[in-house]
Image 1 (cartoon, rainbow, N blue to C red):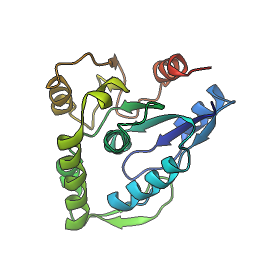
Image 2 (tube, one colour):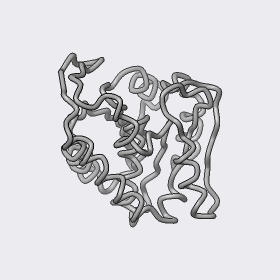
Image 3 (cartoon, rainbow, N blue to C red):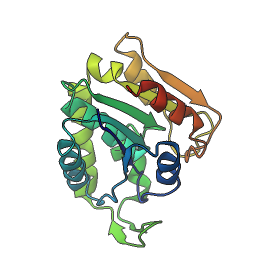
Image 4 (cartoon, helix red, strand yellow):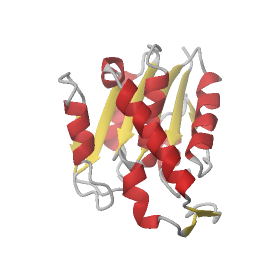
Length: 199
């Protein structure tokens, strides 16, 4: 079965070092890392279109921070698919709250230099996605996911995320690493992706 890796970047960022590392480590896979629009609902549409174009492949979705939040959402949409595996790195589980410190600001994207203002609609869209995750996250989502937490994360407090996962009282795969929010050492993630690939 053909193998595809979709790498989803975090807030106000874009494809970068993780994409290069994944391409290096998995030369026989199709590695995709889209530059997502700021609008959360538009970003999800881009990701859904991408996923839907790979229905008959072994799909591995790797998201960081806000990208991990989007990954959780995608897992609720495709919970019937057995050929999907998810990897969440330092998930920003409550972005509609976490990003409030930027409310009303005009931000410049680190990668594209595009500017964006955090409007009330932006936070409302994030809250809508969050509500969907809370409602539809299920046992299959847990079983098909791997969670990577940087214990020195200086940006996101992951305690509410851990509390949410533990509510399910199911076996889950949470891996801790002494890394910050950027989680630059991808060796642990690469090892788990390789171990989950069916050859």
